[in-house]
Length: 458
Image 1 (cartoon, one colour):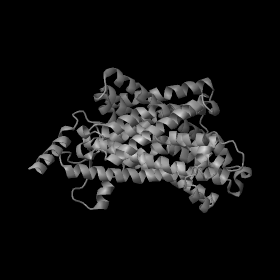
Image 2: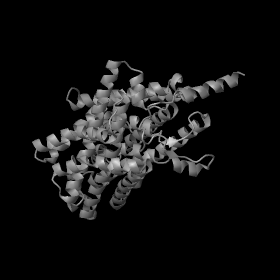
Image 3: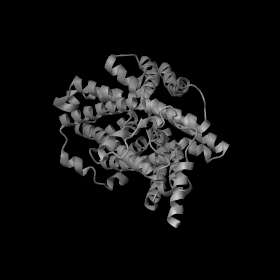
Image 4: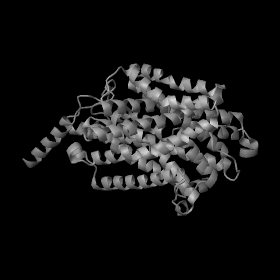
């Protein structure tokens, strides 16, 4: 009898946490999954959301720090890339579980469990984080368009801003189309850098040794600072909101415990596979920086510098080629475009979740994109297309993302650890403790990074 009552409570928990106002209502529960199918067929059905999550971990904001890490310290910081990826896997698994079990996204739950003033403050911080994320992606895409086609920077920015219209069309065609396009763009990034790393012929023994933690990372101030930059650019707050929402695009019986458990299992597997690909891409970026630029004393602080260096035989040797430079620009464009798609979706999730804003989808997405692109256009006009000045915005955006991260991470750990919200699917003790340890460490590291950036600590 006791077991029966426990089962009834679990059943009630899953049923009662459903949400009348669905997250991303137009695609929520629209992707059918097979019933009683084999492992691989089921996994294929659940595969897709992980790709949208993964692009946030390989967006243009990651590129400079990863390549600079290799150029300055060879392969030593690969261990930081590995640890950052493992942290991302844990947090994104929590995010997906939250959405699947409760039927609500992180923004909706944060609004429901905070007062008006606190909720409004968190909404403002999160909206600014979305703007900061989009700024890096828009800058990356605009510079890539200039490098590939010679467009003036302001024209590239406007073209990038208009891709929101493409997203509207894709949403009409179905969410699987968006997943497929983003996955294709991710594949382009992966194969471009794999090809370039193969040409660079890195010393594989040294590469593997780079994944072994070294005390030098802590004792060397410059190495520690760059490590914090890699961590800060990797764990993105908007991805936590996005993951809690798009995990609900699959159609399954929320009242059935086994269906919920299956959704959690396969969504987590998909997320981990795609984040492993993101780990590979970030590793390739750092390996490329080490193999081509370590010891060359090259200035690699900007995308244009990297583009030019890849075709300069005095820097990268015999493999230098305009083709390598063009492939780099193509990968940068793919990264920027895939990230802007997911950034726009995250913007809608946050706007709807925090303030329950009701307006046509085209207006919602247009407002989200205009909020992000406006500061970039202003800077482009003020500095007349000067890439160096405009790329300074990218650095500032990464610093703000570091500030915003705790405001997403802490509610996520709290909600997924709550038995009231999650029932039997709440974080296990080890997962909860690890989540809090990671949250505290990341907060401390990000505070240090911010203080160092503004010159308050050395």
